[in-house]
Length: 53
Image 1 (cartoon, rainbow, N blue to C red):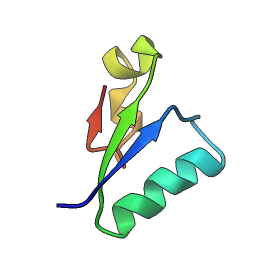
Image 2 (spheres, helix red, strand yellow):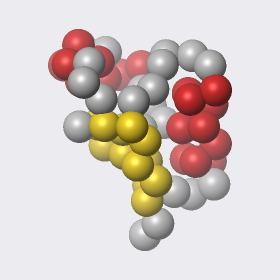
Image 3 (cartoon, rainbow, N blue to C red):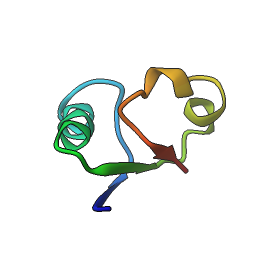
């Protein structure tokens, strides 16, 4: 399985579009973020991310 690891992202913009594109191309997407709120409370908004750390 091919994986792409993203170091940080925004909720909109080019970084978010890259996440969507990677998933649509069949990659396993991993997002490394320091925003704990995204992981704990807003995980449902990131349907294009397979794993969030």
